[in-house]
Length: 192
Image 1 (cartoon, rainbow, N blue to C red):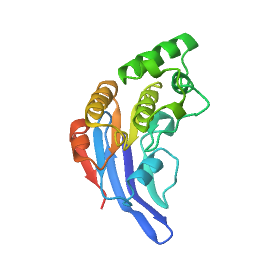
Image 2 (cartoon, one colour):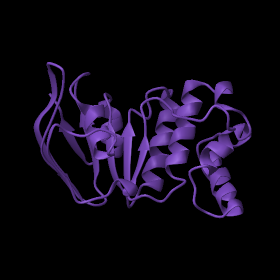
Image 3 (cartoon, rainbow, N blue to C red):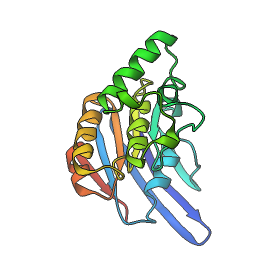
């Protein structure tokens, strides 16, 4: 369970979260929507422990329970695609490589396993980031606009991929796309 109580966050004069509270139960899929600058990404970063709120309480989970897909892919340019996946794994090498190959196949990038991130399109990088999130078995998945660089058909495939792999996980999706929210989540929270 993720419990947020009266979170406040301000950058200079701009308050992005003002007494924000919510509870997300284990296994629940929640979409967070709202206009740009309303604190959606900030909220995910606070949940992940990457930022601290100015005030408020965060309870019910540890940051070691979280896998995070950032808005912009955060891949290691010096590592090929398969290594970008295995580097986060704590499995033995052979098992890790086998799992990485399965995930790359699932996101349609098995033929690109030995390319480097600089050789990939933005959409391909996002798919690598999604695959990497499932290399470690974490019960909470935070997704920040993970489908934004994908064409419609690829997006639908990746939403199905996330639904399959995150079936029993808690998912918080930040998106501007109502169709993505409806396809993946059963609840929506608007920040405005």
